[in-house]
Image (cartoon, rainbow, N blue to C red):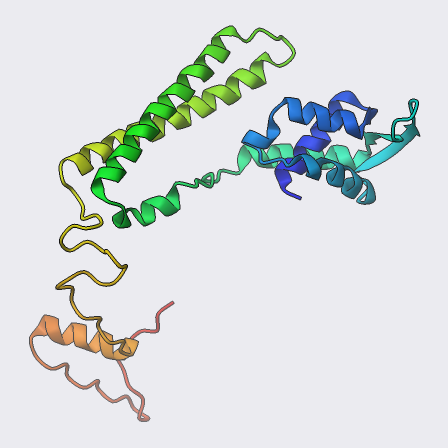
Length: 243
């Protein structure tokens, strides 16, 4: 269970407690938490059961309406409130780069034909601008006083990230249209993932001490003098051990 799922389930229970698990699931789905926090619908019930076993939630009671399945109500325990506050604080103070599915594509950009890479960038820019516009409309029109702050600030963060990607994509597009980089089918491109034509042969690995001596010899233009023996047969001035 991710920390995001854990925090959101605890937070939802905290708002509505005592609350049925079904209502927790329905509420988080209405927040579209799967889109921005990767909360899978099936993980919500598992989180409720797991955190009940861990003593963060407690069962208030069960009831059944007609022929419907029995439903369990939950509320936070004292430990659950502590865990909620700890997770919330950690979310605000910990700064991490979000995982971006585009990163592997950037790493392997050399394997794409230039025309396709340019077309894909133009598509990304147009799509991102459309998403940005739609989110701005939501900000301008959203009026629910119970959730106005959080919804608008989430959307503003999403727009800020979109603006950054749009600016980067336009810069890369200009570079590719100007002929920068070598892409698939072009002379010298990494068409098969092997070394570039004319690339230098790999340098054999040498011991760190030999490498240090070779560098100092190259700078001095002559062979490095032997180290002066210490009293007792030790050597002074040898290569320093790397940290």
